[in-house]
Amino acid sequence: MPLSSIKYVTTGTWGPGIARPLTAAEADTNIHSLAQGIADAIASGVEGVGIANITVTGSQMVFYMTDGTTKGPYGLPTAQANYRGFWAAATSYSAMDIVQVLGFGTYMVAYAHLSGPTFSPSASGASGAWYVQIGPETSLVAETNNITSGSIALSEIHASQYLRFSTTTGTVVQVPASIFPVNSEIHFRQVSIGAIALVPAAGVSLNVPAGFDPGSDAEGATFTLKCVAPDEWDLFGALAATV
Image (cartoon, rainbow, N blue to C red; front, side, top):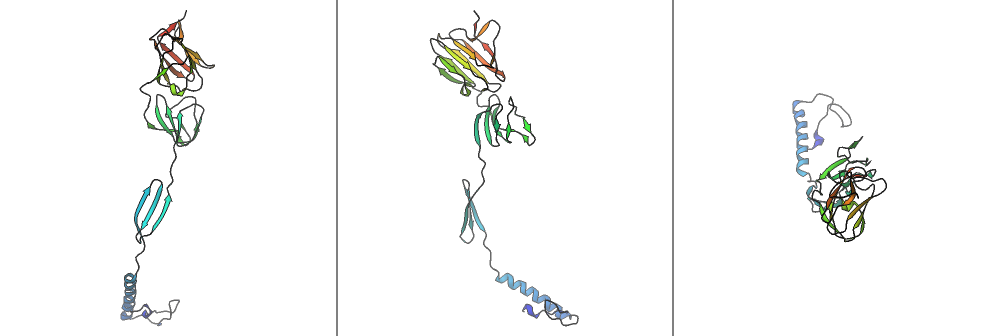
């Protein structure tokens, strides 16, 4: 039954009215016409195109549709981490920077900030905690490094290393400023007859026990440098006695 057979009481945008109340049969006819129209629309409707499958390869996403077509690839947003090496004081860090901190572990920077004089895993600003630990300390076991030069300057690569000096004439070791974070340790061993002598740069303090010099005592001697404050080191072990 066509929808045009629906009868209206009043005249309006829907069409002319019959100007009297509908009879029961006319009201039922109207309802039946509407129900039939809905059924016809459902029966003749066309199924829409949907998503059959989605694949992601790397940072690219592709939609496979039910009609056999594809949409994409679309690039997915990715966060790019940036390895910055060992943490340093008074340094500008950005979110997603990754730093290693001797004695603490590996951390990712959560919010951009200027680092303080010493590292603190709980350091924070208005936005929240600056650091999120993502890995354990990787320098728990000292790596052995054999030194044959007569003069070296310590650098970040020597942090937590076990340095073995095998020169016969001795080695002068420069201890630089503003490189090593607090808690850094460096271990020394005089393997041959050449003694090890530490020379601190300007601004660097070596806390040597009374009656001893900052260097090795004899062949086979071992000693350790321990950073206890910015550019301040405790020195202990088989040290050379002051002459």
